[in-house]
Image (tube, rainbow, N blue to C red):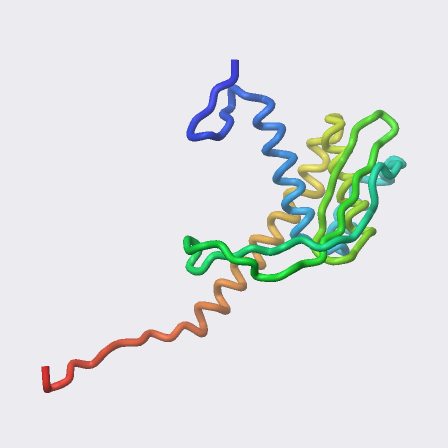
Length: 163
């Protein structure tokens, strides 16, 4: 029996944990530079051959925005995205999307996702790929927040005598 709390899978739901782990991997692969992914992937040793199922192919997606995060949605513009789907010899399929036109990044990301889906390499992929890339993204976010805080301007209103 699966249990859910607030729409999220709980520990009693292994499918939810599996989906969450794959989503985390795909998120961090999409957000990371290709060079960092390749460097982390070297720690896994030689990757198995992956037959292309689809792509890599490049296209456009519409980026939507909201003013203040909760306003009415509007079309902000288009972004180039590359996607790839691969199949490993064991039948595991991996999908990946990458912002931009880097086909090699999309293919490598799809291969890593397929390896993770296969199940035997999850711990190694989490240790060699997911954890270091998540840490790098956290450092970048901290640095961005620090830089933004350094430019903060506090405005105030002085009381005028005619009130």
